[in-house]
Amino acid sequence: MLATLITVFSLLLLQAGSPQQSPNGAGQPSASASQTASAPQRKKPRSARYFATIIQSGSTNSRPYKVFIHSDGSATVQLEGSSSALHPEAVPPREQHIAAGTIDAKTLRQLLKEVADVSKIPIGFCAKSVSFGTRTQISYAGKMSGDLQCIKVDTSSDADTAKLQASQALGKFVQDTLSNLKVNASRLAPQP
Image (tube, rainbow, N blue to C red):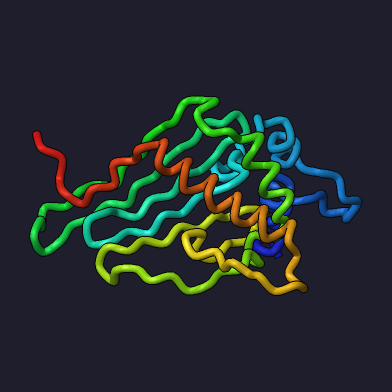
């Protein structure tokens, strides 16, 4: 009997000190829950601060990379690491920061608004080298475009001309932006 009372008493003490709700079921938060509520909030994940991402595939001579675009026209470029049969020493991934105002974020937002759903940009076939060709895509509002280098020129009368023109303007904007950023995506290891 004494052993049973000690066990019950021990369980009650454990329950009283546990970070759960009170045993009466009233739903009152424990001390642990109130401490959590007053703890400082964690910063949002880095990706939540970007409104669009340009994805550039790699080729035989270049590494794939992503350009995460901020509302202030700044960006973060993330280059993937690489190695090849000719250069077996691995090139580590790296990150490059682009200053605010470098990218015309206002124009990009307007083009993306006109296009609306980037996954519906009409993509056609365009001839590319198997080894050296790349693919350029944009991710916006949870959608991913096809290859912006191959936007279809639709001359049919039922095509939405405004959306098609916005898609073509977006493709040109993205290509011009990548050219202006001058990202060095070379697969070769940097010389010491």
